[in-house]
Image 1 (cartoon, rainbow, N blue to C red):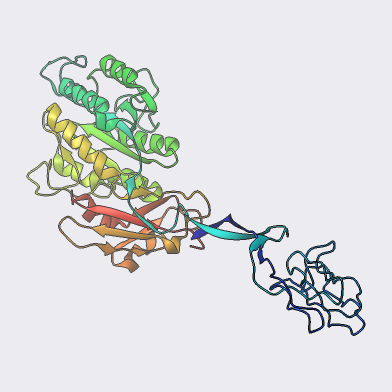
Image 2: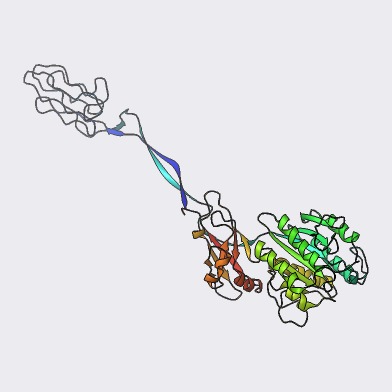
Length: 443
């Protein structure tokens, strides 16, 4: 859509007239009036009466007001001596009718006011939401981290210590991830799986060893202090941790941002419900009902086949690195004994994976985004661009053959989401690119 912004272009043109030459004698037909506005002289009178020379006027009569264009005084029938001046109105001869001046002569300004013509010229301005191709920007990420603080994690330490324990390596890796430049702008809430009053009561961060959601780097000091204050002790209540993730992420999600949960553990469930199907369903329902995925991160001591079961329907993408239990592909992450470099890399992969399928739509300066004017183009690494099919919601993704997308709202969209099958493909392709073409209603 283009706007026409009216501008003005003015032309000022002075009107120019010719100065008449001398006329012929008056008994014959009067001389021709000056061109354009000069009046015609009257015919010669036999008694020398003045002809009805052109009066001053603007339409075909003699020159401007005054005596311009008037004939000579009555004479005795003599011939006019000198012709009237066509432009300014000459004086007639003393005898006979004054002839009108012939055309021609010196060009002078007639004294008629200049005439101004105004023309509204269009100035073309592009509308901000006219069809434009942009590279889609992933939405900002918020995460709730539930860290295993069971006794099997080993010796306690503070951030920066080199104590050889899973706990010490784990908290150093977490803090290294939190303070990394790539984490600026990310939201983080931190809690520990033993920070709960009971298995059935949903644990929440905000207890003495938990840190509520804020945006990095705002609360780096609070996160560091919490990691230093916590320590490994107690059992491994996985059910309580997963229910805590579900409760907190739903209650604290922020508009325009993707919320996720991360469970980090080094062992099998101990206390609370230990059934793998029950544990899987907690994360499955969180993802299916609220679109919040949960990522399972295992350390040495965990049974990775069980982690894979919990992760199988929790919204995490299939990948081929950091798999445990000899698997060639998986949905969980194995960080071994907590080596910080591997731990941080796995967390950054989770970060990228979590926001790889939801994108913010640019909002126009005016007008509404038109869903029918939005095109989503997927270009796989080394492949050709493909325009994806729009569906009304996730339940209709099957009609697009797994190659579709849907908006967060069909009336006032702010985000686009890739269908789950395609999302898995995109997340597994480090070179994939998503572009969006947008247009406003009426474009």
